[in-house]
Image 1: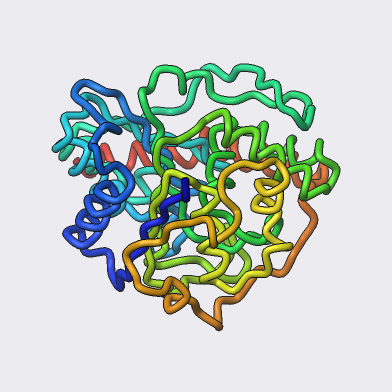
Image 2: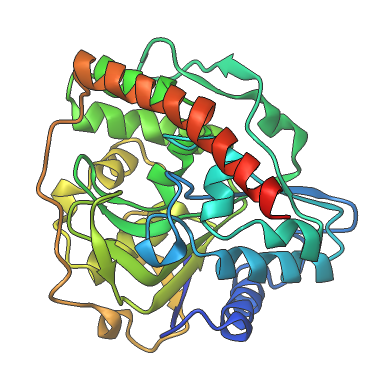
Length: 325
């Protein structure tokens, strides 16, 4: 059976338009409407790498989350939880900066940190790999990546986004443990993706990030959203749209080698546009590649910055907000 990918051209973060895209995607990907049901508990996993405003394009846009909340509420999902493991800062502070806080009051969604890191046996035998054990509490995980260039892995999308389910400061250490082997790191990402097995991946590509992503790039008006149950197929399609050489998308090459998802476009059923290549762009700037490893000095500086951010900056902001109210 061919992997289904649904695409749509969207020029702006109009809530009604994004919501309609989600509904159209579910009609294509879940025609029997069996995916979601009354009383389920669903985890939304956006990209909340760092605390930046939506226009910086570091994080998944809040409109995408709001559209999902609307649709899931209509499908009688009991509990919606939003979570990720930011590289710097607490989840609550990062989510607030990204514009997510209103989702709690408006839709009853909860923004909860990942908990219970448990050892994860992986085929690549990367040591000390632990993943959030709290995932077992959820009926489904919905993967909500942002389209971004990536200075270490070339592109970050559906597969790479699930690396955020490895909690906290373990992530840079794992970069070191693969000894700058980007294919090995990519294969580890596939092990994680296979374990998490999200029921749906919806890509925020209305405003993408080009250049030195995943943090220091610049916005790029790609104007495309995509959805699939097969994140490999979805990543492959977006690599084509961005004209990124496939041999440089290490997570995709790892998926092909480990036979995870559909790599070949001829074995996909792409809907929403007559010719998906009509959405392709020529001027998307790729990141200048750097090593995947973090040196010890950088790790120590990052740790100290984390302590400063969580221990001093965030409490100071909270006191300031209380004094204004």
